[in-house]
Every structure is written in C-alpha cells, then in structure tokens.
Length: 368
Image (cartoon, rainbow, N blue to C red):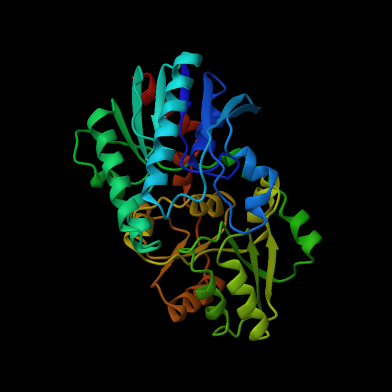
C-alpha cells in the first residue's frame, strides 16, 4: 500500500512518526511530509537553510520518500500567516496524494484532513493543552482543537498514543497504539563504550531527552543539591532549557553534571545502556499527564530503574522499575535516593511496546 504520514515535527527529529514509518516501509511504499521551522537567531534568517524553507523538494531516507513542504517562518505569532501556511500545506499534501497515488493518509493537526482513500487520525499528544499551558497561545490552541475535531468527524480510524488521550475522544472505538521502542537495538547497545569515552565512574543518573519547556531540567539540577550521595548526572541532548541549567550549574559551582549536547542518533542506545538510573522529572500538567513518554520505554528497554514524576499515563502503565515522585525538587531528590538504595525488577511487559509488534498493529488499522 502507498501510505503518506504527516508528522507533527521536522522529519530529522526523533519522534513517533519516524519509528512507525521506518517499520512500515519494510512492506509498504511510505511517504512523509517535512517542514523547516526551527529558526531562532538572526543568523538563521539570513542563511541558505532559511531560503530553502520556502521551496519544495524531495529526498530518500532509508526507503522513505520525504517531501519538504514550503513554509513561511516565523508564523506562530500571526494568525494570518498560520492560515496561509495551512493552505500551502493542504495544497502540497493534495498534490502528493494525486501524484504518488497515495492510498492511505495518517494525519496530525499540522494539516487539515485531506481527501484520501483511507484517513487515519494519529492523536500523539494533547496538543492544544501544550499551547495553552506552555506557550500561552489560546488562539493557536483553538485552531488545533478545530482541526482535531475535523479529523474525528472525517477519519476512518482514530489512533491514540495513550489511554488518557483515548478517553479524550468521543467517537466510537479508538485504537490505542502507544509509542514503541526497538528492543533489539537496546539488546545490542554498548554502554561501556560511552562510559569509557566520557570517563564515567561510579553511579550515573541519566536524563536523555530533547529538553523542552516541560522537561523539568532545572528542577533536576536543583534536586541534586539536596543529595549527599556520590552521583554523576549525565545530561544528553539539546533544547531550550539547557542554557539555563548550564548557567545555574556554573553559578552554583556544581561539579557532578556532564552535558553532552546532541549526540549521534544511531549511538543513542549506548547512552541509555551506560547509565545506572533513568530520569523523567517532567512538570505535571494536563499536557504531560496524557503523554506516553518514549524515554520511559527506552530506559526500561536498557534495563534501568526510572525516577519519574507521577504523570497519569505513567501511573497507568504500572512499570515495576519506576519510582514515582511528586512534581517538586524535594520529592525528586528523595526518589533518586530511593533508586540508589532499591533493587528494582524490570517489567516483562516491556515486550508489548516493541516497535515491530506495534507497527504490525498500526498496519492492520491502516489496511482496515
């Protein structure tokens, strides 16, 4: 079958869509859309990359055809530009469907529901809540809700990434297909390689993430000040909270934090294997309560205990290796202390989150 998936993020970023599409393309012809919208500095807006964002092009990525869609940026502060980008996106999606003979579309809120032989709505997060709680953009949150309602009305099938999100839907049966993890890659992971490269000794607590505004990175740094235990904190990844965390560590002369920045995506499994404790110190909000954290699955696949904020979906997943904590600096520090002292059993239930199994389930939904 010819499938078009419309991801919510730039294609190069690790995300739910990538995991499923990489598996689906083993048996089907898979196409995805891509946008470039991560321009922040003045230099970004005078770069060749910015100029290219106004044009469409295609490239192959591991058997997947990626279609870059033109986009005006920055557009989020301006409703008129958001509407224009939406129209441009819809036009290009329609062209891709017609030109490539697409038979099924997996859509998200970034593009209104297109006309397709089969239409699947993938509800991967509580997106309107994010824009209300963190970006304070009520207008855009309402636009997202409107597009998602349109998908609910028109889609042949609805897929939700968490049980909390599934309950949000009000139409018929919703297929619960959570985020997944490639268990085989974690079995082959080499943690010693990372520990040797970074000269890591003793107990290492790791936070491996894209450090978005809900990630709780600064909360983690502050919690480390309450610990007397000898722990090294390994912070792997980039994001808007990293700069503030680094400044705090420098100002307070905290010496047990290592910031690696971005690392090779193909090597990321080794970092999960290298740590002793996984950390998910997310804020507790409506948005995060509904998420199925891929990080939880990755830490668990690597055989690690996890200290996590008591988010609703994480509680429902009921993993035996998870220590739940309140959304506070003190509770997080206590949870890390308990993880150091506890013997935690890794749940066998991680097998049902294997991406091969979940991709086959998604395939059945798409095929109908």
